[in-house]
Structure formats: C-alpha cells, structure tokens
View 1 (cartoon, rainbow, N blue to C red):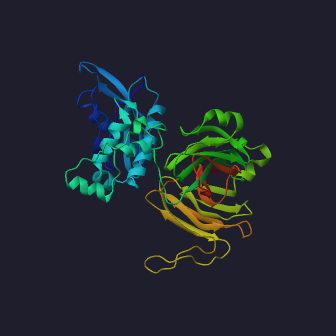
View 2 (view 1 turned 90 degrees about the horizontal axis):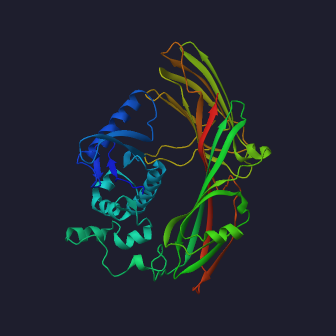
View 3 (view 1 turned 30 degrees about the vertical axis):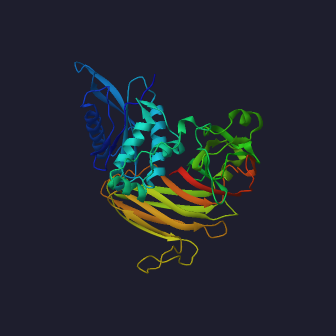
Length: 454
C-alpha cells in the first residue's frame, strides 16, 4: 500500500526547521534528501532553469548494505520549502495532494505560513504531522476533527505552555465517534450565516495579434459556515452544466449531484473548500469573450538591444480590470530600458504611509530590474471605454544577439465576475434548524498563467 515517508520543512537557506520521524530508514535518510534538494536547487539557479517538482535521491537500503532510491516531492510556500520523500511505488500526485491539504491546515492554524510562525509553533506542527500522517498513511485530514485534538495557537494556548500544560485537547469530546466526522456535535452560534466565495482563474496562450490559441478556466468554491445545529443544505446553480472535472469535499452527497446536479451537504463548521472544478470549454465563437483582456504585442531584435510595443484593451463592458501587471523577461545581458507608457489620465488613488500620493496616470508606470532582467508594466485599472494604454520602448543588452523570452506574462483581477458565468440560483436550509440564516455569495476572477507570444 502506498505510503509517505514523512515531511521535512526547510528555511529559505535550505536549513531544516522541522523533520518528522522516519522509523523505517537509517538516521541519515532525511539528511540525504535535504542535501540532494539543496544541490539541485543551487544548480537550477546557476543554470537559470526551473527545478523539477520530483527529484531522484540515492539512499541506503534498510539494512544499510546496498543503495536504493526514492523520489522527493517538494513545494515552495512563502520562501519555505516543504519536502515529502516517497518510495518508488508511490504516485507523486499522492504526495502533492497530501502536501496541499497539509499546507491548508497549517494556514488555518497559523494564519500566515512564515518561518517565524513555524518556529513559534513547532510543537503544534509536530502534533499535526503525527495526527495527519499515521505510519505513512494520511489519517485525520479534516480541520474540524484536528481542532478537537490539537488546540490552535491562541494566547490561552501559550499561557498553558508556560504553565507546563499539554497542548492536546482535554478528552471532553469524542471526535472520532461523532456521527458526522467533519462536524462536531452541539455547534451553536449567536448569529447564523453562511458565505460562498466563487474564485476562478484562467490560463491562456495568446499570439502577438491578440488571438487566443488555448484557454482553460479553473475554479473553486470556498465556504465559511457559521450555522447552529446540523443544517442540511441544498445549493442550486442556474447553469450547473459548466462544471466539469469536479473535486468535492467529503460532505457532498455525490449521488444527488450525479442525479440532479444539486449540491446536498451538511457543512463543516467554519471555513472549508466545498468544491473545485474545471469549467467546460466554450464554443469556438466564445473563446475570445472568455478572456477579458485584449493584448497586441510586437518585438524587434537588434544588435545589442531591441524595440518593443504592447497595447492593452478591455473586452469587458460591465466591470473594470484591476491590478494589471505585464512582466517581460528581456533576456540575459539586458542592462537598461527606455520606455513610454501612454493612455487616458486617471486621478491619483490613496496615499502611502509616508504621505506620498499613490496611483497611476497616463497609461500606468513601469520599472526594470537589472538583476532579474524583468520589465514590469503596472496599471491600477482598465475599462473598455478608455483609450487603449500602450507601452513602447527599447532596451540595451550586453549580448550582441539578445535572447528575450519568446513570451511574456500578464496578470489581472476582476471583482464580481465569473469566466464561466457560473451563478448560484438558490440555497435551501433544511434539517433540525428553526432559524433563517443570512446568506452571501461573492465572485472573484483572476488570471492564472496568461502567456502572450511575441
């Protein structure tokens, strides 16, 4: 049966912060993985390449007499590195799925996953690892169940530690024998409310004329439930056919979804991810309408430099595009940039802590980092009625034949918008409840990996 050997957490310098116990391997087992990862990371940085998500590690066998091997799955979060060694017979997606759940749990416990928070709460993290990973097999993964066993880090928790009291929850409840594993019994709230956040991101490849070569939309529905008792919910969508490749929270009754395309569930208490999905691809005629940002780009390579121009436009009439960033990698040897941003003048926005006016006027502003050779063009917002902003300029390179990236990336946000046009039609509250809760739905659309080719 597939098993995960353990978890190792490294700081930004590659030094271990936390390493779980590896009972089936020699003491040098975690050190071999740490050294291999640090060597591979340094080589990737020196070669200006991306680090492979799975790294092969040569290890000693259990007896210590011969060499064997293992895979090392890793992710980076807030400058920290999370490593999961796995055996040869384990699918790496199994390890990445566990890592994703583990990081979500850490975020729920710690707020921000930072080096300081991990050092201040290392005892809680060790206890979480022991509960979530039982002899290499994922066990207690539901946050509500974990909070019945391991207390979250609060001021009272720190006072108990100083007094020498264990961080384990007192045995006043029995979470494992609860009739609903993801919801503790006897939940009570002074105000009953539930909120749904529908977040979607779009990945796309665009040619230099603005034509969309490929696109896909990914979404998730996050929920924040503060309902008393055991409410039974029915969530209806006006167009559920746009949902494809769905991944459900265990609380969802899958048979009812398959039959009626209705989400029926008893929610966990607090925040949780109800659903992840991929939107059904639109027809050929609607692909361009799905991506709200129009981009036209041109690049001319010259000896020791080149010229470029980028023009943006909004295809969305109802809402503005916000926080637009164009990132252009000008290649090794790029030393300086001269550019002009043009567009409609806009009023300055808020003021910084120092009192200086902040905001973007006349086509936004741009900045060039000579260390990373990346040019960034930033605009606070873009609407369809304004003149299309344009960035034109040139760059100088120490290379006689500059090699800028063949494509550049764009990012943006759109409040109260959905790429797939997913809409909530109705939410019914049933079960042993005698109240009418407050309900709220919020939508956010953002760019994922949107690549524009020159």
